[in-house]
Length: 115
Image (cartoon, rainbow, N blue to C red; front, top):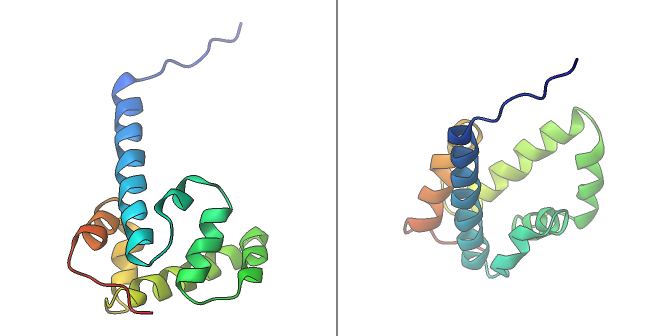
């Protein structure tokens, strides 16, 4: 007989906390870039806004649906995003591996969006 896995309440709370932190940080970053903060809440549209922020063509969204290519494109977009906020290129590594810490740092630091 199949038993459903037990849910660890601590992990649920942790996951929700991380989600809220990242939503708030990205909302602030979108606002800094002159875009509506609520756009972070809408799937696919938020990727379009990211592409607009980094001055990449909107058709690049198609590339996010191609396996392996999507990883490369995501790193390119993330690199451009970090640089648009005046950060050095190596900060993309921080954003990739420590995003939960890096995005709030970027959002609430004195980093300004450079159009």
